[in-house]
Length: 400
Image (cartoon, rainbow, N blue to C red; front, side, top):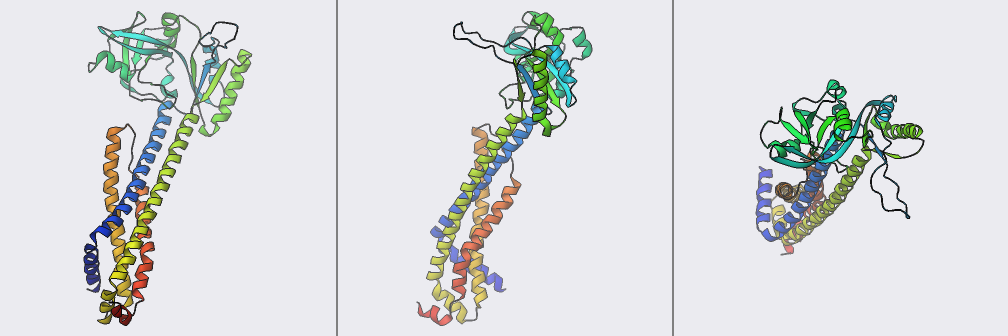
């Protein structure tokens, strides 16, 4: 019964100071919204980094030929050296820390299917590409070793290529032309989106490596070798081992070894830094909101001194007064937290509509913000509440 009277008295007191508690409530809610929204962006970025890592492949290292050197006295030459070959891919596959390798020979092309055409790239590779690049077949099948050995003209389409050439029709069994060479579509890959290194694996056509080298590209050299390593913790060591092997085979450093986990690591560090920075700003905003609660409660105690004296004169204990003012602080902080969640939800919807950022529900940030709000409310409200409870009835009534 006594608690109920304290609650009713607190609500009436806050209702009599609407402008003040609205300002305090706004500062708290904005701080909560900032913490939760930025944490949602950070959590979404972390999930996107994990998705990108999975999409790129299992512990992926990529070996590429180096660019042709330019000399001042000669005309500019563009392109890459042509010394990376299938034998290099086979040699890398025999290293003890390598799980699998997939050769790559690619070139930008214009692909046609009936009256439709699209600009894409053709990538000759091996059946191991699926496991090395963690790709999945959406429909149909991927080419096998028999297709590769027989240099068969079969193709697997990236998701965007299939949409561009066939729209909603089923492309399986259809014929496409790549550089004038007809291919039978035997499969379509699931969508993977853009990779951290900037590549778009949805906009490509995959064909057997022997078919690419003999019938399409008319070459013997590769543009890449995809390597899957058995231990993510040993990626740097594996990259050094691959580099030593290829350098020994070529007798020079005419290639580059790219550790793709470094792309993901850089993205993760940037996302983590931005999240910490934004969370720090949110904490500062919450501190400002707590200061608003402190100022509001100090003025409330001063203006309600006669009321406090009257209550204590008719039997209210110092603990009753303390609990009442602490409840008011907690009520303000809790209301600000709820309002902040609503604001952050609306902000998340706006961010997802305006941008392509990935957001995730930050449950840890929800709990952390609730704890911060309660600490701010009780911490900043404890002093004025204590000051009110220490008054004597006579001194409080005389202040009228």
